[in-house]
Image 1 (spheres, rainbow, N blue to C red):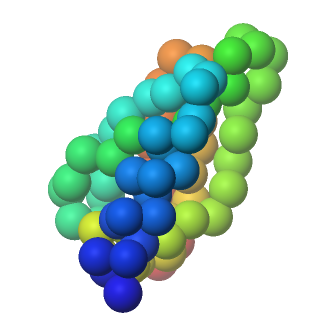
Image 2: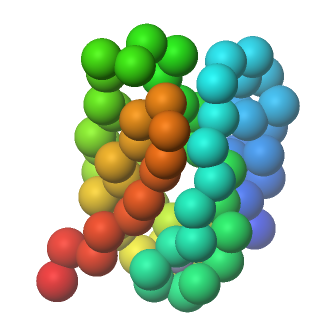
Length: 72
Ligand SMILES: [Zn+2]
């Protein structure tokens, strides 16, 4: 499952032509690159499953930065 999740994330990022930001995941400390908005007025918040360890995270991404927050 984790290998599938990582492959799916890599495939998604390969297709993504927009802005991107990286952060160190709070769950397992791995580096993760995610899509980011190109409009400075936007902030993208979403729940995501870490493709490395499958922990549920809150992801907060702006044009400048990305971070992951543990829910518990
Ligand atoms: Zn993780």
